[in-house]
Length: 327
Image (cartoon, rainbow, N blue to C red; front, side, top):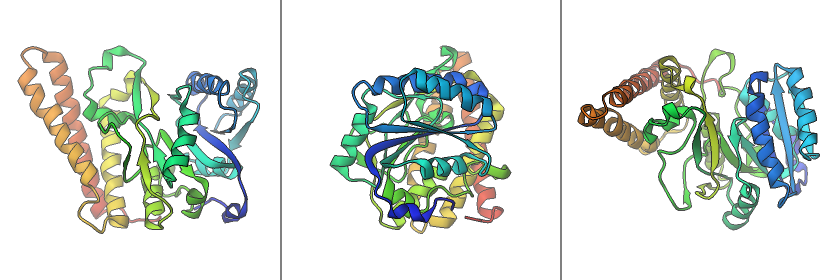
């Protein structure tokens, strides 16, 4: 863990800290869209700071410094991360530079609705959670892939498969759209460097691991709040067979590792098992029924679903039998 324990003694300001991490100047268009959405938020909600942590590109730091100022986001810190590579390291650096009592972390390719900040603040006041999350809705950059069943949206970092319409307690937040009580986040130790795609480990359940530590240490409940939706930009290349297989394999292996670390009861992977059943129905059975009327779409869905199930199964088995936990 890399979050400074001394920060627990601070008295953070009564505000939101919004942390965004990124690593490639090619993602500048996504970042600008996110900044534009935050620029709308300051019209009605001014009590937040933006902490932008950038890896690999100092040029991107300079460009975003100019852009955030041009949009009126003066309470912004831009940090170049050359010390802790990977998303977990960057997020922990962002946390260390933040001051808000509520620490929000969103992906660099999401767009926040105008009232998102107010909604997060109100949810923390009403629910008093350790952490909370909201829906992550796909924003298709290319409508030619919008046929993808919602049961497969998780491979794109979206949560459409989770269909609850009311506030409920859940196991973990969604990585693209999450907020933490500062005390709970720091007391739990922040994000583990064993997760987050570092050093070829490709364990991407860093937010799941953190939420499980928050719950294990009784630092607050984790809630899903349907009104706190964000839109997640999705490009066509994310449906390539290679990307889908890799994402599925990573998910299977990560869940096996987390199961070994935390899964003492039989319900630990209940959410994943329900999703697998949905994938079998929507991605294997239904395409056979519809192949006559929609042959190309049905075959695409069947093909991708088969890759997902195979990749997740292989990853899970290898995670149980090969991977040794270093968290």
